[in-house]
Length: 597
Image (cartoon, rainbow, N blue to C red; front, side, top):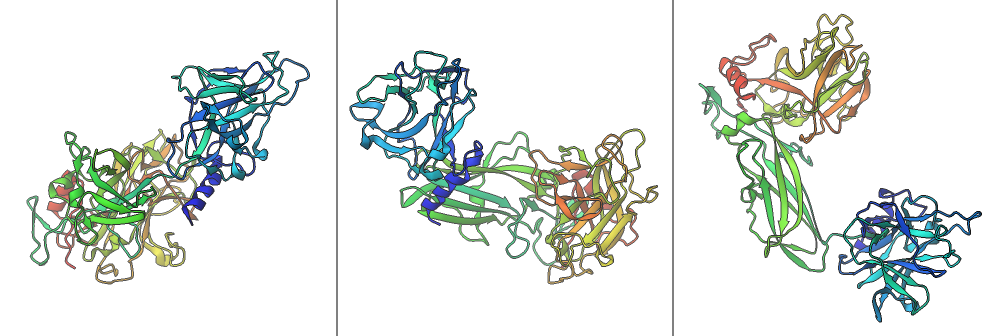
């Protein structure tokens, strides 16, 4: 699709963004000539029977390729004559400026640029609500290269002798004077005036950006064509000796704390007239969530072309059209930072003019640093606690989908789960009804398999009225550990070297007690409000698929891993972690495992 076709389409598609428009209407950004707030005043253009309101646009304020989609105006008729003389209609036009009278519309034939579409015209009524008139059949017209006026014609049968019977343009009277409001007679050579206030006659413009930047930071891709999640998962590749990391004697590989890397994918569109555009690319991190006294840090130099290629050497030259950059940081997370996890770190990606440092385009994003796969929220409890519905029904559950990567750990033990809950009320059913870990359905992607073969682990009985075998809770926020018999991911076909049995997503579901309400029941913790969302959380209503995504929140449900070399067992008790690992976990809030594959 050509740029021109994209622009024409944009005028039509953006219409409903502003107002409900007539059929074929257009839209775009309103290029304001006011503060967008009317003070309740409106005015008669001139004492003549017909006149023209105008708003001056100086041309240079639009980028190349801009379209004038339409006009937004506010007009008012408060007639006291019965019957009203007419349903006044103000018809907008685009006109070149008069070379003999700069700043005013040329009323000669060659001065006309475009007239508003007839099907977009509305009568001037007793309300000053904004109305929109369109140009070019709703597709807009090319913005003039020089100055022009957006004008509105006052009808000739207007009764100018009665100041209470005319269609007047509404005024913005408390903003700085912009020297753009005009009024003039319809007759060539007639009276011309500049109005000392700003009036509501404003162009709607689609303006393609000369330079556009879009970026997304994620962890590494976990499988072919994976776009990655906006989190980086870290895990230890060492044993513990008195809280010190020492190399695993059985692992000849390098000591590392991560098998995930920070990846950034950028698209830069050079839509301007320059065939090539030099710009400095800056990637800046805000480490204040890790250290409240730390200032923002330029981390551009840490990134390399994907897979270990060359670094960024500014300025970069972007040719006309689209440039795609994919880079990553091939460094493990420093061990001293691990104790701060989980945390969300703000990043800003910028393109700056190499001559004066002016920012041409920027995009900001939070990147989540998580201690391990299976830990998707940042433990903030900022979103409160929620139920699927109130009161809860049998089969209501909050679910988290765990991606493929967590199955690829090889010789580690999946030993339990954690969920953050909050109980309210005086007659509270104890805790949660049940927990299930289920495989992905073989037919329906990202849906849990509810067949007997789909169940991996469970605690409690779904819908048990007495909740005799349920999961205890506590006041908000309470982190509840859910114990179940250990299982080796390697034994289940999850080895990073090719086991296929579990290289698919799986879902953990925590079921609510039937009858729980917001005032008396147990809710599941939901993290939101500025947190990184990794789109893994859903709700299951009444046990009926499909899962319904929670787009704005992440349920605080996590998986726990043990280490086969440090005391893991199969009894589902409290010995899933060795003494050293359990102690470290209580201090640093992360799990340490050893890879041997």
